[in-house]
Image 1: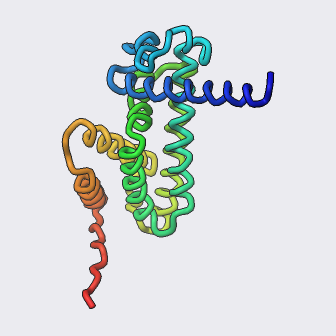
Image 2 (image 1 turned 90 degrees about the vertical axis):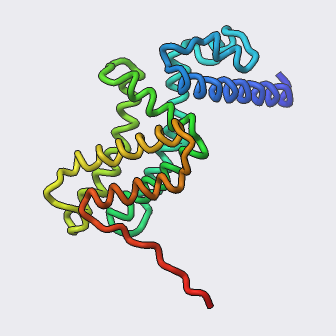
Image 3 (image 1 turned 180 degrees about the vertical axis):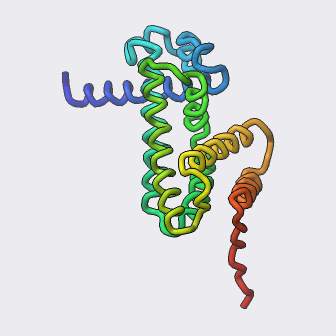
Length: 215
């Protein structure tokens, strides 16, 4: 096959996979994985059901592909951001809320798909169930390392267990994202309230932002 034609075919293939992926993200978030059919996904982008089998071989393979995308775009960048962030454990927890809310605006269907699949496949031992557990475990591990270090430095209450604090952070974040997309609500105000309420729940006072004096 001539190089130019091969490159064109690869470009068309990538475009088709991307279009199918975006349609699948949206439909799964709106209807749930089990209620979404391959026919609906194909029709959403003007393709045939056979096209999905050509690229993914099965509905399960398509979802695993979506989870790969979501992990790459959201979890990888989140883990890197929190690992490299400076400041106290509290600063990093607040950064988690802010960084997560940015993803909720920029990549809403990818983030909501992770949440949706974590609900639909809870306690499942199949490939998808294991995959979503592994993704969330990565988030928990990063948070638990931050929290444990903060507890050792006296930045967080030592009478509260690390594992449960991490779970509360994730639950608060996911709930915040669901509420943002469920209602017409100001995202910036929501994040600010979540941050304040969460810090007060830990018995800590939110630090006010520095006020710039007019010259």
